[in-house]
Length: 51
Image (tube, rainbow, N blue to C red; front, top):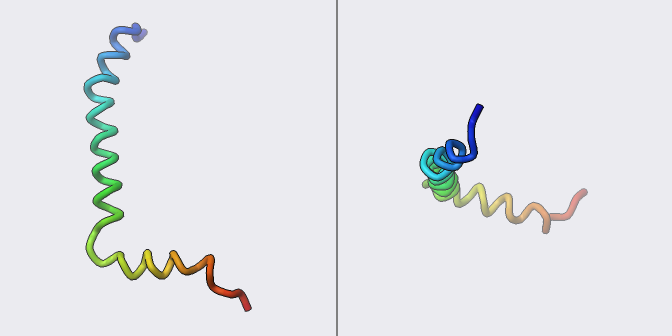
């Protein structure tokens, strides 16, 4: 069974590293080359009229 100190140590080291890598991956995914047109098209969806 994990004690509080063990869980805190894990969260302070590996948990922080994992969340940092998730954040960096998300930022790189959003700002990857070639997606500007896709995001501009998706941004206009709420403004388009439905037929």
